[in-house]
Length: 176
Image (cartoon, rainbow, N blue to C red):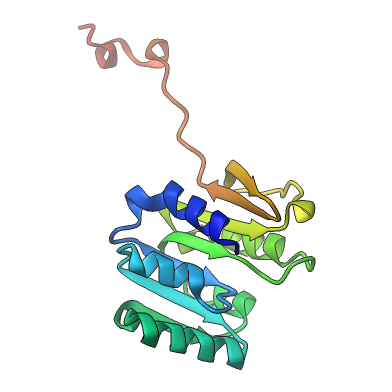
């Protein structure tokens, strides 16, 4: 992730990151999850299966002294998502490019929405050339931003439809 894209991401979520539970899938060096911790996230779970990447995350957590609120999970992301869901405020998905893994991951989360708090977000980082619409049942794309070679796609649960005043019973409209 470029510094510009990372700064933009945290500018978008900065008001809600304090105390949040953050899941960093395909964590790589852990830069995004560590940034979440540095900005006040209560907990970050890093899921990565590469031994070198896990060592990098451990080293970066030691350097930043943010390891107390971190949990490193050595696992295949898809197997991890088949486990018992824990609700997160933010799920960050940044898989290796051009393999379609972002869609597969998004579909896993969509099929098991308990991975996400009711008002939580899934944030997908891809190259803009990879993007294509994804058929989802429980999540909707609500924002999308590009920063050069980085695209961020934001998904959440659909908002409840507003109840029209005329759809309410008379007593609900304040009419006796």
